[in-house]
Amino acid sequence: MDSHDSAHATCGDHRASSEARDTRERLIDAISTHGPISARALAEMFGLTSAAVRRHLSALEADGAIEEHEVPVHQRGRGRPSKSFVLSASAHEDLGSEYDDLAMLALDELSRRGGGEALTHLACARVAPWEAELAQRVEELEAAGEHVDRARRVELLADIVTARGYNATVRPVTVTIPASGSSGNPRTVETAQLVQGHCPIQDVAARHPELCEAETAAIGRMAGAPVQRLATLAGGAHACTTHIPLTEGRTA
Image (cartoon, rainbow, N blue to C red; front, top):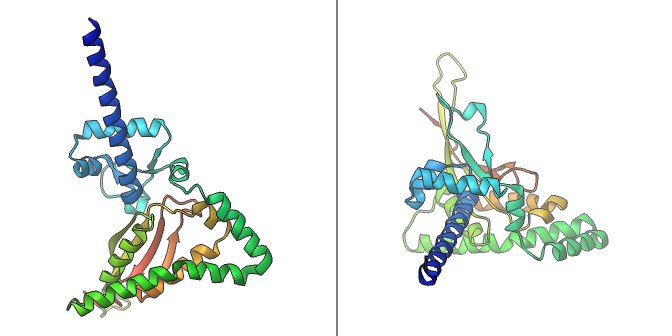
C-alpha cells in the first residue's frame, strides 16, 4: 500500500469512528428520553438494522454507559421479554451540570441558616416559572379555540420540563378496576405516567428532597389532579415517574 492509499484508509477509519461516536451519542439521548427501550425500537427510531443497533448497544454497555433493565414480572407477556435498556448511574452523572457542587454548597448553607422553611420556599420558587409558562400556553391555546383537557395539559407539561433538560415523555396507562359486587360493572380508568429520563439536579435533590417534593406538588397543580411520585432518579431509580389520573373512571 503506498502513502496515498494509507492516508485514504486512515481518513476512512477516522470517519467511520466519528460516525460511530455520533450514533452512540444519539442512542444515549434516545435511551435517556424513552428508556427502558428495546434494541428493536431503537432500530426503528433511527432507521438502522437491528444488528447495527445491537453492536452499538454492546459497546455502550461495555463502556458502562447503559445497562439492561429488568422487566417486572407483572409487566411481562407470554414468551421471553425483549431486552430493554436504560442509562447507567455513571451516564446520568456525565449528563449532570458542572455547577452541582456550587448548588450543593449554596443549598446546604441556606438550610443551615434558614432551616427547612427557607429551603422549601426556594424549591417552590424554582418550579414557579413552570406553572407560569403552562398557564400562558393554556391561555393561548384556548384563545385559539382549542379545548385543553387534562391529558393535553400533561403533554404541555412534558414539553416544558423537557426544554429544561428533563427528557420527559408521557406514557398512557389504562387501568381496569374489577366490579365491587355481583351486579356491578368494572370501571376503566385512563391514567398517564410522566417519565423524566434525566434530572439536571439529581445529586442536589438526593441530599435535599424538598426539591422533589415541591416539583411533585407543582406537577399536581399543573395537571389539576392528585398525582403520585412512583420513583425518582434521586432515589436511585432509572427515571422520575409520576402517576397522573386523567379521568375519574367510567363504566366499561
